[in-house]
Length: 430
Image (cartoon, rainbow, N blue to C red; front, side, top):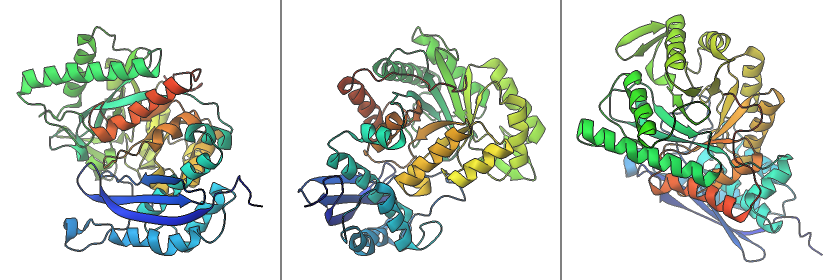
């Protein structure tokens, strides 16, 4: 008699689909033995860390070399053969088998874009077999208390995400003081529209960056932050760390000059001067979080920043850690940051993602689940953030289908699952 708790995959399909930047990514469909189907698609980053799991791109004339037909073939070939070989008792067993088939340290042979899409679909398969939601299944798997997260809306774009001279990549609003997910999304949308009015009035246009935020012709981070504070106040809300807070992702890899030097708004700053610059921002604006304030390999800069500001704000490592549990542990022991960004496609599997969250928690580091700049309408990260209860998510502006899919899913979970609390997880900075 079959074990109803196991996942049996009878067929595997994959295809190219376009992401939000108009480049192909991998879409997967698994058919289970009961006839049910589960789907997933892989996102792609523009601002990527050196140590991320590696996407497989075709490198030919199609899509300027960014096609993923080889990655699709990985799914329908070697991975399909492994996946349909026998029933799967755990997601860990299934993910480990895919890593084994790939045979590299960074999934470069079959492609992280192929493997992560399968892993997400498989997670949905296990939830289906358990007859529960994905977020509830993940909570059970990880022993977490479910929590609806504070969304961090990227409403002003710069850096690698926009064609403007702004060195810092993301300027976000975070409705920390909202009473519910629905109220938080409303706040984000209202600030977004208030900002649109200001940008249009001042610059005559409101062009968008990769993540749906506005990309006005500004170069000075202070000017961008002033616009953001004014937009918050235009809605009648309060710009404050416990009301509508601001978070930034400088993405310092993009303006690192080497030898501990950074170019910001036309000025070259050494490590100490850059820390001073961030401290002035913290003194002037309601900042609750700074992500990738130093380059991924400038560990001395990270330690200086941690010593100077780690007690007063959240310092998030993204390119620094690339959702890798081993790197996160090293960062915790070395005092590089007090928080970690979580992106499943950086590590290539859902179980690798959960391992990263576990290690961060073991070291009292906070986590924020994140989308990528090249996104699809797949809303898996909404279930991931609720199920793991980390209390923070960023998924771009409250606009464009691939961004709002995640926010809409969060509101759907809230409406369907009454009783899940909203807000930052206990111990979250600021």
